[in-house]
Amino acid sequence: MNPTVVLELCRFFHGASLMLLWGACAYLCLLVPSTLADTVWRLLARPFFLIAVIAALTTLISLPAATALIGSGWSDGLDIGIVRDVLLDTTVGQAWRAQAIAAVLMLSAFLLPENRRRLGLACASGFGLAALSLTGHASMLEGWLRQVHRGNDVFHVLMGGGWLGALVPLISILRLLGRPECKADSQRALRRFSTVGHWAVALVILSGIANTMLILKRLPTDWSSPYQRLLAVKIALVAGMALLAIVNRYVFVPWIGRNPRRALRALRLGSIAEIVIGVAVIGLVAVFGMMEPV
Image (cartoon, rainbow, N blue to C red):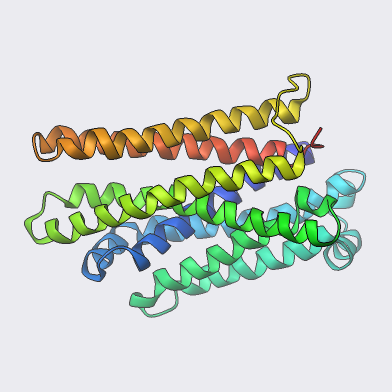
């Protein structure tokens, strides 16, 4: 398979894994009452472990794929000496080392006492997301502007991952809302998600606009540019996610008092739709993030 395709797939699965783990675990740690968080964690612990394994495997595969892309194909990507040179002497290698540390920390989090695992996983996956800023278009800049761009990149992916990943345990919480013993905590968790979600959506949009201005210094309106076309599609999808979030909050949530079954079903479907769109956005970024931003 072409090294470019392999690296794009690694970027997609790796980025999606980190975002889902970060957002889900941060939500459970910070906004969900502990008793309910324990219940949800028991439901999701096994899928979370599999997602962490995917993040580790994509980290492992991405180094020879990146080396093959830098060099002359898979003959270089599988050459131990060349891989070592890329690992030790390039920005790509520096970023890979950070991701390798994050992967080890994520897997090690499952060895912690059960009540600390989600916190360990949130910290490790958040570190992995922040480390993504070591590569990408910010590296094309110099001086303070590079640091500003990297800082904005970190903020953007943490806010985006927080929004997207939190939707996964939210779906479980919506299912638990019907249980009398979980109802009060579930309502509290939903209210907190709604409050923080407003800020997360707004900050994702603002930091995304800042990124576009830092990279292109204008809106993506040149349809002859593959980079700008994909960026425009990403912007449209994020706008669609924001619209769905607004509908969920201001249309479906008020239905709960009048028709709980219908409202909860609509909220679950809306949340699933947001996750699907969010994963599509990650796929687009995995592709156009490797393109020349022209």
